[in-house]
Image 1 (cartoon, rainbow, N blue to C red):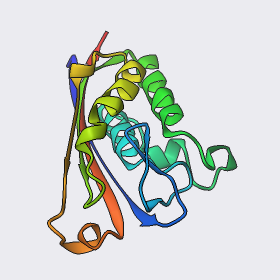
Image 2: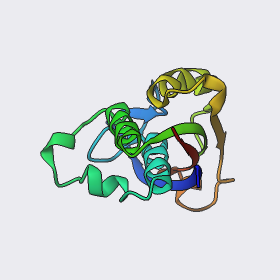
Image 3: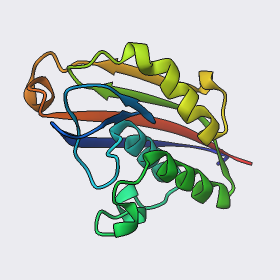
Image 4: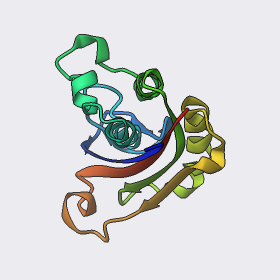
Amino acid sequence: MNFRVGFGFDVHRLAEGRALWLGGVRIEHTVGIVGHSDADVLLHALCDALLGAAGLPDIGHHFPDTDARWKGADSKVLLREVVRLIGERGWRVGNVDCSLVMERPKIKPHIPAMKRAIAPILGVEEDAVGIKATTNEKLGYVGREEGVCAYAVALIAKG
């Protein structure tokens, strides 16, 4: 088959004193995301979607939180490495679609910058990068603003 689809999901806690990196963009907010790297939940879900589509192990296998090299790492670097890994196997990105779930801040104003950050890494046009945001309607850990999660799907093609 010349096309494959992969799905990714990631979740991280929110806490004061951390930076809020989403989709490769730093967003000013009262809390940020806790993680070993910069904890960009959207890029992590996207990495897993691409890795899954190529039949490769997940992001934790490639960039374990037990490896000091990835402490505080820019998740755009991780995404570049994932694109390189799938490229070595003859795959290229067709398009991606991501959903971010958090109560605050409003994400819509930041989506164009996220697309500008992600598209060149993937080697696609900005209109091949879908990013949506929603709340969790005040339900669960997202609704209580204890965490944030993201979902991503990716289409890859041979050649």
